Length: 436
Image 1: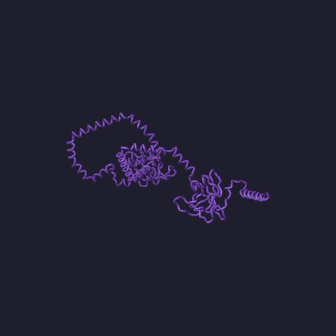
Image 2: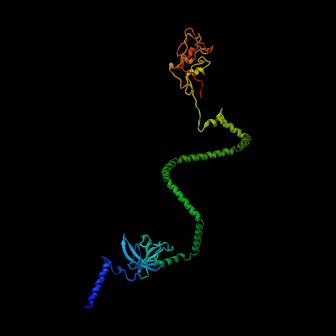
Image 3: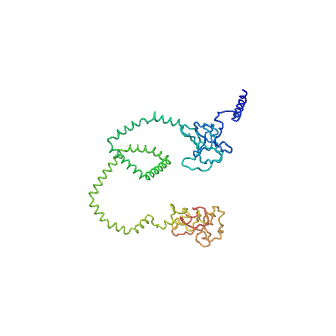
């Protein structure tokens, strides 16, 4: 009894130390670091691996790189519906920077382990530093023994493996006695596949062209939609007008037959007339260039093509014209020499004349005429030297008593019959001009 008390106290102390080192919760003996676990010494490297399914992976499971144990699993936790595995690797071991994590089984009935290897077919690249995390998209889990056996049982019991005998029997029944036809079919299939392989580039180009055509149709979707909405009414109109169209085609056929008969009947005369016209056509061909120039000049007569090229710029003609149809202008120009004409008739400046801006309808702006007593008897007659200019005379002023104006024409009526009183207000003389 005396010897058992120290042993009991030692066991209680050991349990207290283990509980204290494990924290407030105890997850079993396997959650404690086992003596001799790889990668648990000082200076060890720690990595975190996120895995969707860890199967039966437990803490203290080995960590392998190239099938060599380089560490062990320190802790397995759950976060956001996936497992988080903390692994401890011996110091000095290089974990590749492109390493991916895989959870597998050592043998059929062996323990689980974690592999940190580059992807299949890639060489190790770089190095992961301690504390790095391998994300969820770079981790996977090999099928477990239970999953493999379960899948195999499905194939053997409820799958198509038991029906292979029936499939083989049916194939034998279908192919028996039809060997030549099957051989010919295989030959044609070989030719067909060879033709497709030969024209592979053309097929690819056709598919690309169809892709571009589909893109064009997609860009013009609104236009195609409008066309599809417009075409049915147009087809309806065509269907309604089908009897008329048919009648028109029948009439056209009748006309074609009639024209064919007429041409057949007058064939000899037509050929003869054409032969007789040959010299005329040859003469026209000989004078072709001069005839072209004459035809080009005909619609432009009396103006030539040179004037058209210089005067017509584009689709317009540069023209500035002032048409003056006032009575003084007509008296001095168009009616001059008739009973309505008057030489030296006062002209009102038209727009564009040099004196148009200085012209005034105010009588006070006109010049002062000399006294009437100093004027010679015929001073009021135009054209006599010393007479005042016509534009200096007051408008509507009759000549002095006893003085009659000298007519400009022996056969014309007196000038006061169509004098300045019938024209617009007087003003300075303006140069006579017609249309500009």
